[in-house]
Length: 155
Image (cartoon, rainbow, N blue to C red; front, side, top):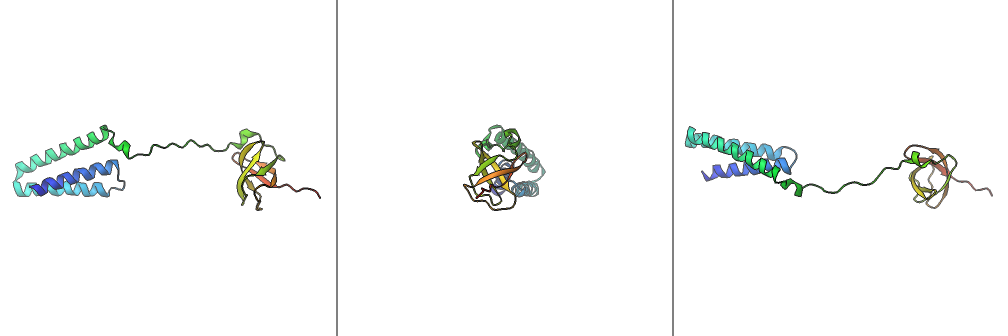
């Protein structure tokens, strides 16, 4: 009898953990199998009346445990509370014109960051590798980045 009650308790705990914490259905399947084994064992060892009582009480306790665990917001302790507050560069709203000059903040191999008009912008070279601190010229302005090349200074 103690083993049957133990299987029921373990099965309920595994079902609640499956719903709240563990993804993948493994714990839920194992918990369901434990509950099924315990109920069948009770039917075979103690008779129909005890089996019916065990079946109904197991169902009621399982439903109550799942309801209580969801209602108590116990699952909030396991969830992430961080939010992403970063934003994507909207180069189109910066009105960067073709021919504008900037300075690379990071190396462009082939993409990196440049500064144009005191604003950091994602940039991509046209295939060349450009070191940090190099002056560049805008070839094309796309919605999320600009295409640049190294500014050639006359001799």
